[in-house]
Image 1 (cartoon, one colour):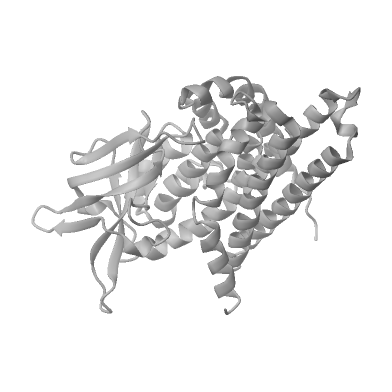
Image 2 (cartoon, one colour):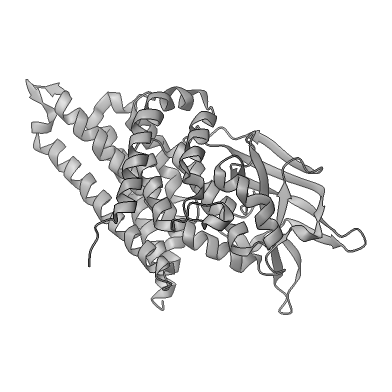
Length: 384
């Protein structure tokens, strides 16, 4: 068993690490406080090819793999999670459904811009009244056969990358009928930005991820061509489960980045901060907190490496993705708390990196499946 990265993966990691330190770090504090979307950074990431990392070259991608995306997310999140989640959502939730389930015409229309970073896409799953209970979807789409259009009514909540100036589309899960067993038939439909009846509501005021774009969406007799159905009709539930399984590995990688960023900042501060005539890193209480942070980050990294390796090998990875997402997100929350403690009052200031880490960490235990959902997945995979 060899956990060393290939030369290609190592080169990518170093490139993204340098970008995060030299381009993201100097500007993210001001952008964060202004709740400003980092358009310039996204443009640079597009030129670097980050949005096309796990896609084949014949679709406009970089010909890499999903693990490469995870490495990039980890390095970005060591500096800032808003930038990292923008990339994660754009790739695994935005472009990936079209790559996985789209027709050749849909791929040709949308993927070139999405994979270059010129445009972003959102994934409209969560609704105001349905979070973990995705089967409780209320948004409906009725096929007007005479017009050859889907007519969509409903709303979606907490949708990332849905309201930027470069958002091109949102894929929406909607009830399109009733299955033979009486359950809801769920399908996924592409809704381009600017479509009449598609309303992007004001941005949320969030605790963290302040540079990430997040909106509630409303659909009022929103009409799109019947050809905008993504994948087979009635397969929407299965499709988003597959997308979320993959996305949990990516969120785990992002969580590891935040957890490792807490170690980085705490180590630096422990050497610089003087108390009682010596660096606080000389005190065992601080040493133990930093040791525990490093232990959590290291273990979480191994968990997402394992899940990614299983996925790329074509093996079942659902349980391992849930384990990685669960452990890494909770490690990020714990490390953010510890890093704030190491920094004392300075850690409670918004302008400090660990202050941002603390604000950004909690959502990792909620988004793309709560910790409780991950425990359910793990337990059920064990037969209980």
